[in-house]
Image (cartoon, rainbow, N blue to C red; front, side):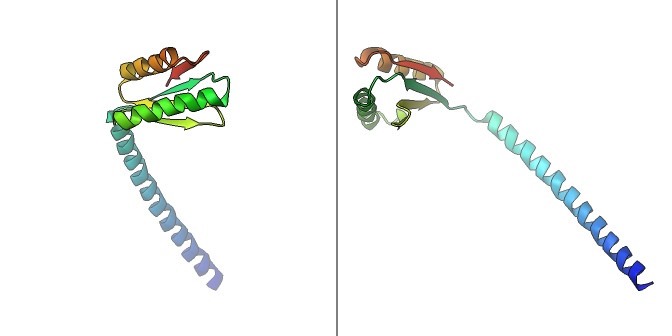
Length: 118
């Protein structure tokens, strides 16, 4: 008899735990939906990847040009990956990002550069 009571108590505890978990899961689903709505409302930041550097000197030259631009223009945000020889430029304005990327690819005197915007 004592074992049956213990099993019944354990089963009741498990049912309560499952019910609590279902409530918590429902709460998390609602929060996730709220976060998704906020994400959709936020402006999207675009990224231009400039690549095709033939050597490290060309990469360093463009990185230096971007550094000079960033010190003069606060809206110019960039990052670099020297191992992959890629420069990343960021903007919320896709047209401005395209113009900046095109200028860097065409006007810096570095050959064979290409860019893609995501």
